[in-house]
Image: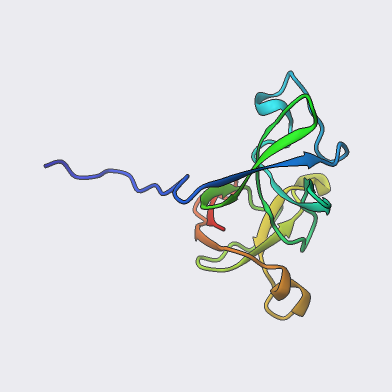
Amino acid sequence: MSERTNVSNIGVGGVYRTYKIDNSTIVYDATKTGGSAGVGLAVTFSAADTVELVADADPIVGKLIKVEADNKATVQTEGTMTLPGGDGATLTLNGPIVGDLGAANAKGYIRLANSAVAAELLACRGRIENAGTATAVVVTL
């Protein structure tokens, strides 16, 4: 019997949904992998059935997986996934997450929810399982 050399739960419990994109923070681009520069980033709702990249302290709906030419997106809304930590974000094991900004105020990143801010406690979701790589923080929603 061989020993396992790696631990990974990415994709476990994955649930994927289709939403419209806001066509502002998320834009279809056939030249980009997955159809948009925003693929792999965190999203929230901007309107009914419509997602946009998260800003600071936004609730997280999920991870942008793919964008199609018809301005529809596939979003992983549940399960274990990686999301990028924000610029200088606090990323604490087991902590709940909210949206954050990246370098140059780019949207779509995550950070630990601030327990002293009631609105963030209401908006937070999921938990951080591994913050060893800030650009690929393992979270479960």
